[in-house]
Image: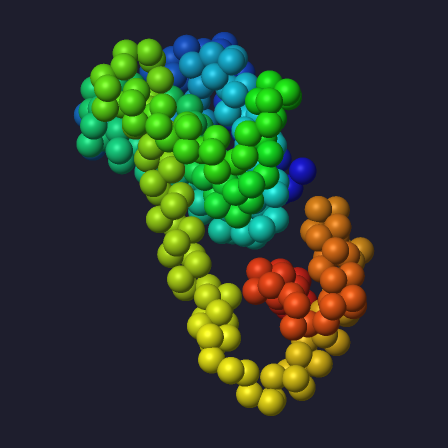
Length: 255
């Protein structure tokens, strides 16, 4: 379990217990788009409230299964930014399309996590009810279709469909911006032209730096990924590493 996924899980559970014993918490901190100017704090607080145990369970299971791997991939700061921007995106779309509906739940934020996972691991099998395998990309596409039909179809099922859609849209926009601004993207542009001869000596320096990464101080998930990438480096050489793998090594060699 990663740092921020653990903290988010803990916070959501604690807040749910508080709200279950004091219904006034829901009334005070739920998000009503039409009243956002009077209670602006609710664009954040609604993400930690849930309408019932099953609502909480669904969101926290999604965060538990998909969040840690995404946090490792993005880094804690970017993961947390993605999470809250997705929640804010859910609030924004609700302001535009469902201004009078009271909204609670981490669904917008968690749906952003779903989308991030599907973008990085599109063919990863997700087992529905632990039985039926569905690739992550198709599961997210199906969830998007349901949200679109539920939102614009006028469904009155008590589900915040526009919050889900807003989470998807905000997560996609943030990840695209992150990709465009990242050193990884700049490196990718450079590799579109032939590499100069100096790259060989540069790689030699990189290899020495990467091999000095302290494994003992890493989270178990990061340590396993490091071992895999270093094994690939030893077997195939630096030229066979993907840009993502290079970025992963650079992040921990400079930590």
